[in-house]
Amino acid sequence: MITIKRNLTRLWRDRSEKNEQLRLKVRKDMIDLLRDFFSRYPSCEVWIFGSVIRPFSFSGRSDIDIAVKGFPGSRLDLYLDLEALLPLPFDLIMMEQSNISGEIMNYGEKICGNPV
Image (cartoon, rainbow, N blue to C red; front, side, top):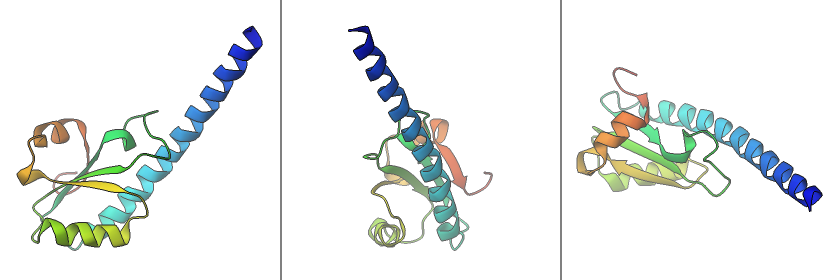
């Protein structure tokens, strides 16, 4: 029984460590892609939030949570542009229309806009 418990604990730890390595890589790649994309829109402020910024919360089934403030076009236009660019599923929040903007600004990671 103890051997089974040790094996399961080791498997769980190994999976957690792999997911954390995946999170760190995805976070870096998403920041790079989003900064490059939003460099065309200097008035925009952009945050990532959710599991991609919380250690040991991300998995291969996670999506990327993105919040944008000050985009000059429509949400649909932005969504379609990001869908063509990003290799992973994502949720898009427009800060001007969100009731969780305060939480995103407080707990999210601002990646574009002044000041970063």
